[in-house]
Image: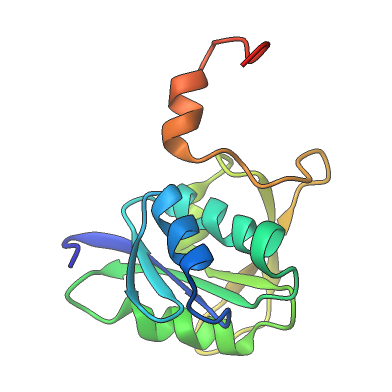
Length: 146
């Protein structure tokens, strides 16, 4: 179980080998069916987008940041439950930590008990972003012929 500050992703996608593999690809750890923790808010956001891009375009996703020994998963699950089909809702903390480093735009969305933002894929990035390990490996390296 992770410790310290974590970003929690909760989704309505059924637990499957594909979902678990995607979570691991983005550096997360599945903690219970449909829920995972990430050390990075950017990685959690990228994984949420990848869930919709590769597993289920209508997936509902909630993202929240908190102390691992607290219950940030409860807020993430609440945001997931409030999301519409194909919607990713993130708390203000997630947006503050991810900043402009993601391949998404954050648009205010009504949510309870705290304000939330809908993550919308940027049109210039129609595919899921590369996993962090791959992106670091390719940083500044041409991708031709591989």
